[in-house]
Length: 569
Image 1 (cartoon, rainbow, N blue to C red):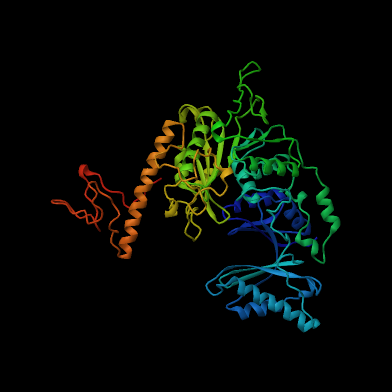
Image 2 (image 1 turned 135 degrees about the vertical axis):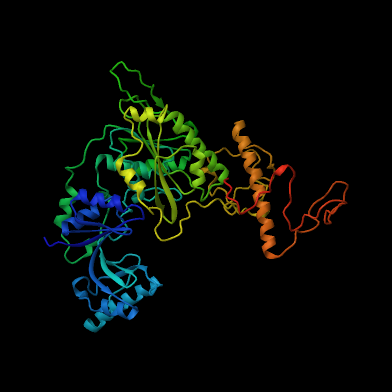
C-alpha cells in the first residue's frame, strides 16, 4: 500500500504519551509537535490509528501544504485542489480551523474562505454547489495555520475519538476519556495489581483502566469513523481490524471505584456494563473518609499474615499477594464547590494516603495548588496538563513508612528514570501562555446571601445539593443559619473551619476597602451602631483617630491583612 503523512492530534501535555502509543502500534517517522504527533503509514495504519489509539483526539491526513500572507492566498490555494477526488455534489462537508497567526486572527473567517473556495470550484465545474453541514458532514476538513504556514487535511476520524461509544450516563463535568487514558499510562500501571479511584464519578477512569488492562481497543465501541465516507473506503480492511482480538488478554486483579454521590455510582455502573467490563470493575457508594485499607503486599511464604478482607454492601476485596495497588483519581477542583469544603476533602485524601495506602502509588490531578498543599504530602513527580479549558497538574505520591533512605535501600523507587528526565526539562510548565494553575481562590459571594448559608450557584455553592460530600445541616437554607455554627462534628475540623471563615471575612473586608479606594469612595457612614445608642459619625473620639482611608497601626506589632499578600485559604 502507498504510504503518506498522517497527524494525530491530542491535548497539551500528552504528546509524548501519544508518540509512544504510535511507536508501539508500528508507525514510522514519529515526530512530536505542539498538541500533535506526525507520523507516516499506509491506509491500514490510518485505520488502526483511529481504532486503537487511546490518547489521540483526531487522525488527520494532510493533502496540501502552502504558505499564505492573507485570506486571498488561502482562497487561491484551496481553489487549486482537485476536489473531485474527495467529494461530490451529494457529499456535505464542514471545515474546522486551528489558527496561530498575527495575520489571521479570526478562525471563522478562515473557515468561510475555505468553504467559498470549495463551493466556487464546483460551481465553475458542475454549475451546482455541495452542501455545508456543521452537525453531521459527510467529509470533515481541517486547516491549520501557524503564522504563514498552512496545512489542509482530511479528518479521518469524524467525531472526536474521545467519544468512545460506551458512555450511557454521565455526571457534571466528567473527565475526558483521552485525558483519563493518558493519566493511567503516565502512572506506569503494569496491570499487575489492583486499581483504585475514590472519586470515580461516572467511572471514566475505571472503564479506561479496564480496557487497557484487557487490551481492548476503544474503537470496538465506535459506530462510525470519518474515513468510511471517503471514496476509497475499504470495508474488508476495517472488518479485519475490528475482528482481530488476538492481542486481548486476561486481567487477574480488580478495579475498585467509590463515590459519595449515589447518582454518580449509578452512572458509573451503567457505563461499566455498556463497556462489558463488569467482571473486573466494582463500584460502591462510599465517602473518602471511609476509604478501606487495601490488602498489604505479601512478601514472605504462604504463612505470611495479610490484612483481612475489606468490604462494603456491594464490594468485597479479598486479601491478595503483590503490591498494595495504584490509585488514580480526579477529585473535585473547586470550580463548583466551596473552598472550605474542598480543603477538608483534600486534607482527608492526604490522611487516607498516609495511613491506609502505605506501600502504594497515588496519582492525583487538580487545578489548585492550595488544594495540593492541603494534602500535606510531598509529590515525587508532577506534570502540567489541561482538563478541558482548566489548567491542571498531575502529581505522583509514593507512600511508605519509615525514612526515605530506608525505603530506597529496600529497593523502593520514588522517581523512575523517565520521570527524572521529564522533571529535569526546562520550561516544561511554559507553553507560551499564562497558566492559571497557581491562582488563588477569589470567592465573590452574593452580598444578599452572605451569612444566610444558602448554597446557590451564584453564591459559589453547590449546583446539586445531592452531590455535597457533607450532610445538610438542620435549618440550612431557611434563614436560620448562624455564622458561628460548626459544620463538622470533629473538633479539629470545626476549629479549622471557624478560622477559615474568620480569615475569609477579613479578606472580604479588605478587598471591599481596596475597591472603594480605587473608585474614590469614602467608607459609608451610619453603618455601625455603637454602645450608648449613637449611630453614624466619623468615630472621632477625643485623642482618637479617624480610620477612614488609611491603614491602622495595630498594637503588638501585628499588621492588618492586605489584599496584595499571597494568603492561602
